[in-house]
Image (tube, rainbow, N blue to C red; front, side, top):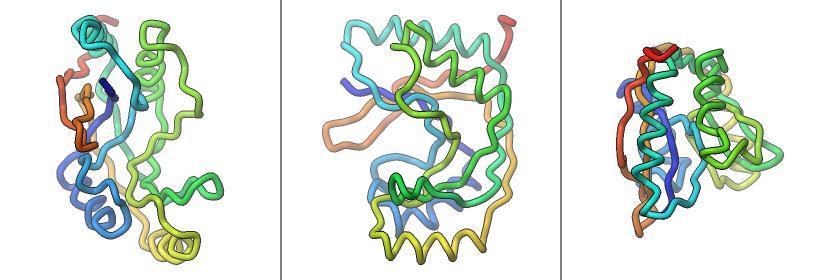
Length: 172
């Protein structure tokens, strides 16, 4: 089964993201606005409990983090994804690294760019037009995130929460 790890921002930021996602993200109905902490990966059903236990250990080691969305950006020319850029910080980087230990299959294929997707799979023309507009509109939103979520993918392609872990930093 396919799993992933994400942090969900506040309802306020989700509402802002969804105001764009409704129009520009074909995955709008499949998952709530989120910041991916670990890309989707396959896990056997027999190993999920061990993985959840390890995530609980990580949550005890890692502190809540500041999510600061500072601007609209894009992965162009690699693809036409538009996103709210989340400023990296020590807590986000440490959490990401912990979720990519050998236990979880090691480091990812791509560099970690903290972000919240607001549009994807746009034509080049639409991407250029929408990006120009959203770049000028901008975003500046700060909040503290104190949870991460282990998600799994359903047969229809949508994602749902398997378990939630509160970041406490108690085991430092």
